[in-house]
Length: 121
Image 1 (cartoon, rainbow, N blue to C red):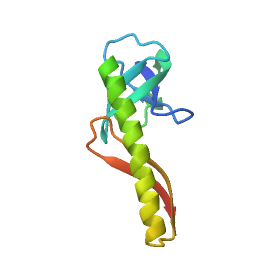
Image 2 (cartoon, one colour):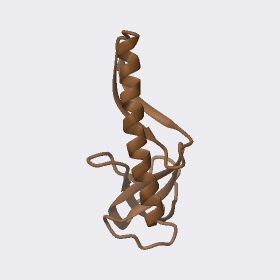
Image 3 (cartoon, one colour):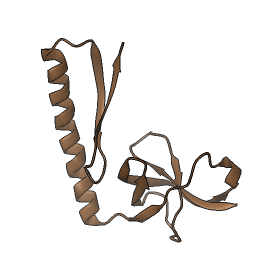
Image 4 (cartoon, one colour):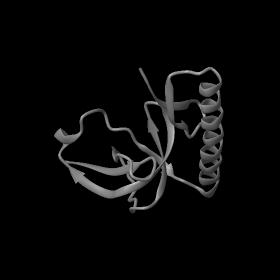
C-alpha cells in the first residue's frame, strides 16, 4: 500500500494521484505539485488515502507544498493571462481563416509553458 492524495487542476477535471510528501492534506486545500510539464497549481479532491501500488500506472510525483496566498494570487494571474491568450489565439485563427477550433489555454504555474487545447483535421 502507498499513501497518495488526489489532485485536480481545474473544476470537473480528472484527478491525478501524488505523493503527499509526508503531509496530511485535507480535501479542498490548494497545493503546488511537480508534473512532467513543471510546477502546477491544483486542488486536493481526495485527502490522504492508501491504495495498492499496482493501481499507480506511472511514477508518483510529489506535492511540493501547500499553496500560499502568494501562490494563489499567481495562479489567478495565470488564469487571467491564459484567457487573454485564448482570445488572441482565436482572433488569429479567424484572421488567417484556419480550419481549427481553439478550446482552451493554460499556463503552467511557473509560466514555463502556455498550453493550447484545440481541434483540427
